[in-house]
Image 1: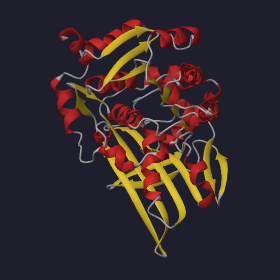
Image 2 (image 1 turned 90 degrees about the vertical axis):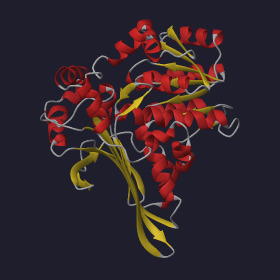
Image 3 (image 1 turned 180 degrees about the vertical axis):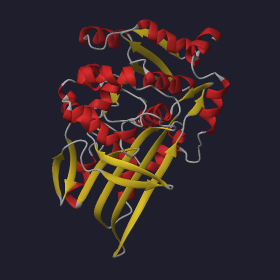
Image 4 (image 1 turned 30 degrees about the vertical axis):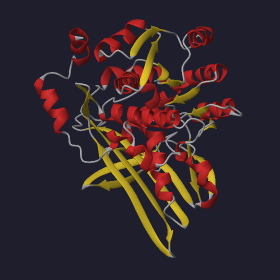
Length: 390
């Protein structure tokens, strides 16, 4: 069995640990600074391959001591982005593979430096965006003789928006603010450049529904560095319902809350509810020459909440956890193939979708499953209920 340490027992770490442990192929240690939170996740899953630890990953000595006492094949960080450099350094010292979910450009650069010369794989930016969207776009890119433009668009949206932001908190608030407030990489006229977040507003229509999309940070991952020399334009934008961008500009720019992110975090978490009834939209478009003709190919998918191991998980939880677990599985199942810094676009989309974890990206889902679970009254306290029954 593969041995892994997952750091962070939050929304995403809980599902990552469950997917791996319940697959039968992994022995999983789940560490969190709040040991009770990790224990709660273990009780909810109720499997024998999952063990909880009280572990402060911000304490480098404590993390190093744990890895020495409990050697693993891989460390998976589902912690906030600012924790990941220290975790990557600990993984390098312990000679173990490293994976994270960061969208932060500077953290990724630091991980790349740490990975230099390593015999193990260092794979940052796993999950959805960056992550799966880069893999999907890279697959389309291989179909072209010459490239002109690549567009990456991703959105995690409430199925039933009913507030002025037309949004619900579906993942890390700190990560969301980071994406909305930091510079955005793009390629324009063949040059790699930085663009302002919350700009580049455009309309996009998918399956008859009108959305807006705008610049956000981090979603492009390393794709621009990999293919930038042979393309005219490449950019990443976040999909939202129309009107959201204008409201966020008011908060972050006009009211200057981009410079007081702690206050903005408290405002959002106090006013904007969480939901399990979301939908993730993945849209990649590549334009270029095929056999001398100008053509465009698209990968478009909508992923809805799913019931996994008897519990309803939101679409953003499913897509993020499936993205990273599929990549972890591919790296550990092919010993020696991946080492040093590994970009997401080094993985084939066909391999991801054929993987036992990547299959959760399969198209064809609907909002009926989440609606039925919510109506039944089982969604609100499901972790507590599962823990009580285990």
